[in-house]
Image 1 (tube, rainbow, N blue to C red):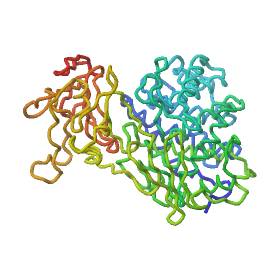
Image 2 (image 1 turned 90 degrees about the horizontal axis):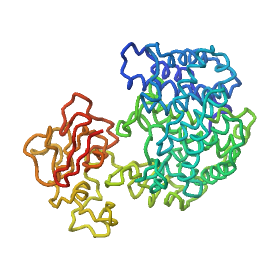
Image 3 (image 1 turned 135 degrees about the horizontal axis):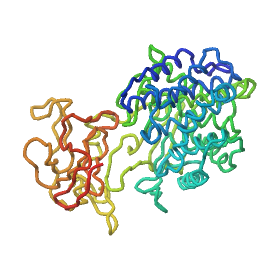
Image 4 (image 1 turned 135 degrees about the vertical axis):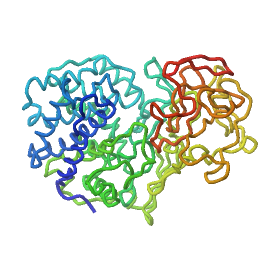
Length: 567
């Protein structure tokens, strides 16, 4: 079970269709959000095409290079109806800028060197908007480093200060044994010592924190830092235990719609000679993972990747997911850059760890205990370390991080009801005091009685939250599809229906979004929107919703009298 020697992994038709969808004419007055999504599709498929072309020594039988050159010219032209949003207009454009920079580097002899000088100048100007920006608190530091590294190689502007600051931040998130936390939880990366708790463990450790440092060195033509190589080697020794016999990866963490992008660090290790895997094991792992998704229906009838896991699965969607998001999976084809005579393609396949025998492995850095069984080929993880708590003031339930166990063949309950009322939530009388959640206060941690929202603990409210909503289908249940109620003890006075409940009136001025995260009013209290991040659904401007206000309007909790303004 493996991939063919030097597989033509980037199917020409699939790339053309996906990229064409990303570059439909935008038209004058096109909303930037829509154009941003098309940039996402362009950049991520460009990365896939670049690996295919560079790996073939510039051979371009599908005619991708002229097509992507045309896209560069139109996207960076301020007068074009198809122009891309600048890096200042839309932050998401900074994510895609890194893919564009890597693709331009890999195809430089055949694409960049053939561009007209005015187009080159516009591309440099578009990427140069990165200079002097800061405040990135996770893997985004590498988007800036990659773009500025490419600018440096083509004679464009770059900032040594930006690079050194980001490299220092990268090291601060290293937790040992090859593992990085994708940023710190509850800290502020812009402040000295503001890293926070490093417990954000997911696939970003591999397809970002391990992938980009070596590509940064590759763009500059330098030998990677030996420390990076050592960390990647150690990480891959752990990560290979997280794949099942049939190629199913562990179902844990955000952005799972990127699917086989989790192969990126394995190919990076093979390219850099920094892997503990035998060449045949690398090929077997890559082949089984790709076949798992392709045979499972990840590629639809149009030859496109949908938002989902196997086939379409909307509940896996994140707030930032767009139609082109799944093509982050392009990183899984970095191995096409290996030459045809590389041992990865020529040596016999070797079995995966799960195929060699039953095993229990302790991954100390992320706090995971991994068990695998040969009979069923399943990998299971007992989670003792990952939580991805995004807000220092709120207890947020996230099924992608905060479950006690994960597996390659099962997913946590991603339903709306499960997110509103996680199974671990019990009444205060039945919950041991030590098991109740806490929030940080000026004098240490304070207990939050189960059944009350975290905002209530912050502003000193003492009244309990209202009873849970009845299940759908009962006489008193709200209709399916109706907006969820805030989990705070009271709804906002503005825009809520019925009488104002007593207790904590945490008056968030932001439009409630079905993201499953609290909607914080900066400096004030917090109330939960009550929807799973998997739904990927939010109220848009002009839609009615409880508590919706204009941005910038005053916000005040009537219990703690803390005033602020909405974002």
